[in-house]
Length: 127
Image 1 (cartoon, rainbow, N blue to C red):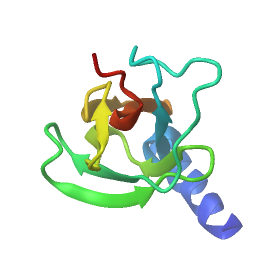
Image 2 (image 1 turned 30 degrees about the vertical axis):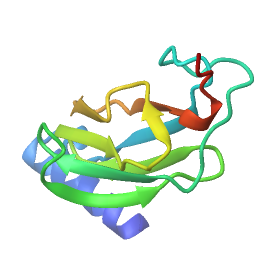
Image 3 (image 1 turned 30 degrees about the horizontal axis):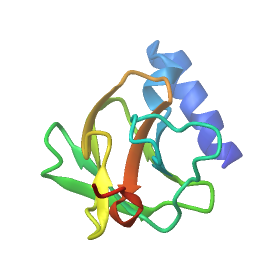
């Protein structure tokens, strides 16, 4: 790992390239149970683990690059290069999305977090 990093530094110095051009960053997808259906995770609303999340190239969640599952903190993390991506959650019966199920992300070097909220339909009050 150190040899690879040293080589990247030497190449960037020799050719005048920016070191940032070689670095990756992360997109974190955070999944939570949105009890009040407001699209935001409030105090007392749990994170959801083991939920499939996909990383797609470009907009529209149509060209799958990678898939992961949320961890115990409700996070699925993808390492990416600069570019345009979309992140999408997989639908599960019994749940209603309270945020967009497919979210577009432009990466320019900074890490990004997108949040996905869902409401368990069984919790709905039927009147």
